[in-house]
Image (cartoon, rainbow, N blue to C red; front, top):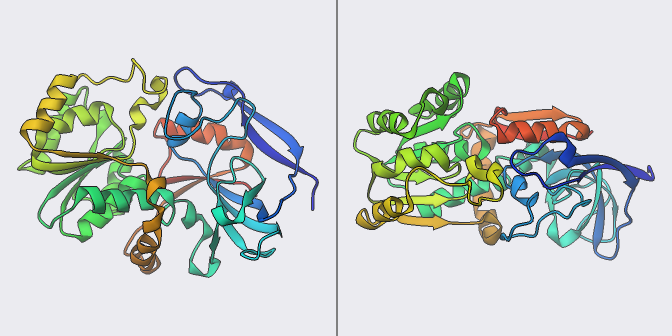
Length: 345
């Protein structure tokens, strides 16, 4: 076993969009696992929008990455040393291993992956946190019913594509929003959305609203919120009475500096609150890490559908740990196609 490993650390806190200088590629000593811990050689790591928030030092639901600390993130790889009866060398494990070639983690915080059940990368996307987020938010807070209309942005990403596919299987009309004609084509032809609108084709929320209204016909029952910004402004006036809005993210605002003063929509707060009031809307923010007790139920329902091909999967895999910052910056700009993953080895 090599005595050295590579990692990417946070070199500085960005104001706005992250830049290459905010990341540091370093060679350090491989850590030694303590009691109840495992040492893992990372094979693949996940890139997700929430990581942008960890780069800021503002108050949030989780602590920020410290300057000089390894960038946070989920990974999947081979156990090469274990001080836990739950894992043995050679096992494949998922855990929060960070942007690194190796990591030590508490065994009780990791999950054993059976590679016979499909590609191990699925644990980072469709059968991991993003897929679980889409499924849980839709089923718990969206409360979908056949014949209703759903709108979700980032429709070809791992969260949006899960939301759209599950909703479609339940008999809903599904309207996706994505960036560019190629992604819109994928949303319809691969993920089965009824309609997908290219948000880049609309100069403002008003013109986008008209397109959504035409596609929806009688308004929107469920808006799965994962982007904020222009899409939120476009959809809100179209919500039907008793509509539901699960909120799992606001990617369009992440580079505005911790969702501070710059993170505002042209739809004023009074107008937003009035819409919620007079249409009796249910608006539920949720952080998926608070709901892991339901993860086995999710795997039991969605795992067989992934295996059978009923749930489609698209992955965008960047090669090499050193390319993680570039891939991450592209993710925040919508340049990825499908679930963004980095192949570490």
